Amino acid sequence: MLAEMVCHLRSSWTPVNIEHIVEGVNSTVAIDIDTPTGEQRIVLKASTSTHPLAEDRSRAEPRVLSLLQRKTAVPVPAVFDTCDDHETYPTPYFLMEYVDGETINHADAPNLPVDVRETIFREAGQNLAELHTLGPLDEVGDLVGKDNEVSVLDTPDSPSYDVFHEWLLDSYEETLNQLLGEGGYFPELTKDPNRFDDLVPEIRNYLRETVPNLLPPEPATYCHKDYRYGNLVVVPETGATRAVLDWANLMSAPPGFNLAIAESKLLKPDLNTDADASAGRAGELRRALWEGYESVRDGWAFDTATRDRIRVYRLAFRLDQMACLPLFSRIDPTLDDRDARAAEHRAFAEQYL
Image (cartoon, rainbow, N blue to C red; front, side, top):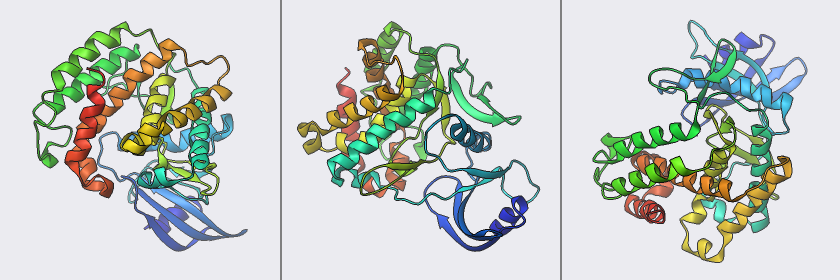
């Protein structure tokens, strides 16, 4: 079927070898093909996730990739062709360029040379700044592909918002409700559903008191919610980013929110390692990220108001990690000690209380 899916979009291409790529919730395969101009390696990505928004998000991905190639300097694979609907094949799916390089496991990141990691962080700032120049967008919410366009989803189950901080409070009220007595978003996997019950009231009060008093953020724009090592193709010797992958998990939100998420995901190994924290390595990498961002965004500054917002946004991201702890512990072998990871989450949240 995979060979047929390729030929359905490019009849002159002949698949000769198929290699499944394990990571990710959708089906992704690398395919060696014969073309009229020679041999080539491509990637086929098809929506096979059971998430209610999976198909709409997947329709947005190739369109955003093409937009990034036309309008920005963000390194992304070229899109060859797309198929949104088919009677037999899993859809939507699309064909894109295969980019040579290495994907780093986040557990191995602290062992990389300092200059390599700083390059990854600095270029992350530059890439996010390029992405954010594509805005502003009128509403806040999930970005999906519909009617051949990328737009903010607005449904009763996933409403859009005019004010980002209203979205933030509503979103994390829901997260806290799931944590209280349920153990998070995956209660069927939870071993201790009351693990964070004592923290929930204090965190709820903190957010209710703090978020409304934050100064309004910058206008919403395109945000990559999963900017992490697993979605980067890099040159291992230098850290130079050759491609940023997985553009299906997008939303419309202020730039500071995207920076807080990316920083939290890229710093996750450091924030879980006492030696790194005491050496100040996390601070150095954060500075590299911010300096990279400022070098691209004219007129941008990490002033006090921006830093205050990013600090609160980091807590919001951590709540998602707490709510997803049971799932992450099952699928990620580096999280085998669930109690230790829960203690790290607890220590992080208690800094705010």
